[in-house]
Amino acid sequence: MPSRRETVGTRRARQGCMRRYALPWCEAHSAAWSRAEERM
Image (cartoon, rainbow, N blue to C red; front, side):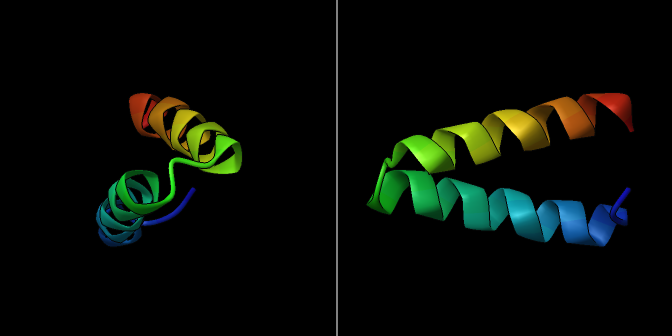
């Protein structure tokens, strides 16, 4: 698992990615990170 610092950075990148592009792979990426964060 990544560190919490990495998780926060990834969350910011994920949100920016979804807002700018809204691509299907970004949605899958977001879902994967949401599940990872729930386990922490």
